[in-house]
Image (cartoon, rainbow over the protein chains, first blue to last red):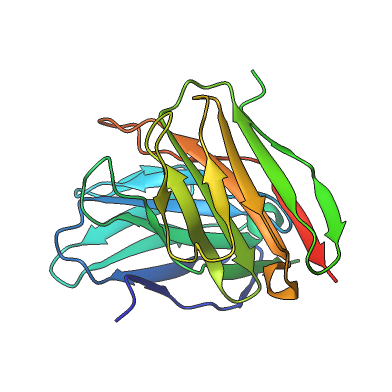
Length: 112
Length: 114
């Protein structure tokens, strides 16, 4: 089983729609989780961290389910500018010496 | 602050040629990374460094060498380029610690090996 798995998509949704992505991770000891956003031909950038209690940032909500070992990202009221690839990222050992593990990404296209 | 910069932005090489990609950061971060990104493959870690003078292998280190002589610079070398090394290369850095897991990426170097 790969360390971090995501549905590659693409998810094609109309403006204003709500869309959700899931990501599963294999290492149950993982403590830190993140969502990054990558625009076409650009570098990845941190979108939000994922906390055990879940967290919300405007139209974006991230949640963690430790029992099932998955994290989710919910985008409400989708905008055209939300079109991008969303990368699920895990710190597999909660150790500063271990590189973060990136999923391959889920591509989102928001259509007018 | 420039953040993370990469030089060059784009390069075309012939098979067998060598080159060095430079990553520079002005964020005083300890850790630096080199990734390659290919269509459908996601980001794959080539080498990384947890501090000046240290380097470690990542997921796909073959065909690459790195050096971290100065804290702010991380060099990626291709001694004999192959077409399979055609890719987009991203450098990243971060400073581990509570609440500081963010990795900051450079804008990327697009490499084409003919």
